[in-house]
Length: 476
Ligand SMILES: *Cc1c(COP(=O)(O)O)cnc(C)c1O
Image 1 (tube, protein in one colour):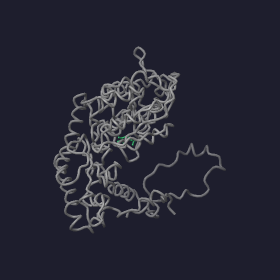
Image 2: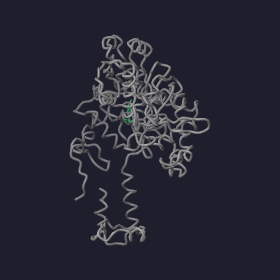
Image 3: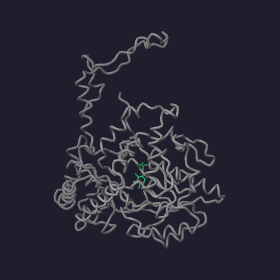
Image 4: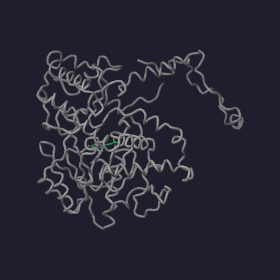
């Protein structure tokens, strides 16, 4: 185990530091000055460097291992875009600067909104939201305001059980009542069941496409017609847009509102607690309700419009997470339409290649083909009390990050794999072989290996519930 900084502290020559500016120090009134030392650890510079480098090596990261975490799109994001986002010309801009001095920033946002409209087939976008779920929340507030404006009381949102878990959560948070919809065995929407729940109180239906089983909604045209004939709106959860870019567009399929996760598809990794961005796109009749400020172009000048009387208001400080927006802009401009289409084609091809290699050996509940990800259910193969969690832990021993497990909830012992478009055939082959070996050989012949796993990781099996309920945040 790596020691804590306080444990490493010694009387040695401490790491190089810069003394506080004497002039500032002199201005601090005597009674406010510290009378006892701060008690910071004292560590030699090379020990400090090694401490942090060693800690970083204990992480599973895309820069060291294959990261097949389903639903999260842990792909390679071009490092050049991090450079661009870190450029001082953008980094040192302050949101309170006069608008004339940050025209470049506004241009990036204006242009990205236009590009996302093109990719998604929507009329306009707002970039303010900080995450996918935040985008859902914003989109649902837009829907609520719209129905208020036409004086209709619609308080229900239909959410299929194949939707992402954030969908019902966001709808409840936005004050709606959730109407769950049970899917067909293949994970698609049941039109008969949909007809039963489409009542006059339904404001919208939320659809995750591809759904959490990695399946495209084959009856989307019928679904769209049924929902709209009912006077309801259709919401597209586009967190996984890397499956459809340049191939189909949510706007063309009849969706009225959608969100995109820039921190999945557009050059920022998902997860890790870093900043994200969940732009929402709407059809023009919903534009008045979008959050403020709106970036607009007046002659040759970009301006921020805060005066939108029907807007749902402000959802995030200033302009949203601008560096994430900037990386997405650089990514879109570098790839262009053809490049983005290629991303999706490759993502779908890679997933289907892996699926084909698993299919004869392990149960695949949603069938023969998938979009950018797929779900395995090894339930029938597992003996000796082995469960999916044991497989995931054993994968750590082989140097892989574990796939998403026990999600979606509609599949028993689910293992959800998303290879992404950026992995090579060799990487995919190796991973498939290891998973098959664990499930088909080790779980029968050497079950103890799975129960003891991980053996090679920096820590063994943690009590995850206890860690979440009683985190130890203070060093005594
Ligand atoms: C990741 C994801 C979300 C939620 O996005 P966050 O940024 O984590 O809030 C919503 N829907 C789907 C389908 C997703 O994959």
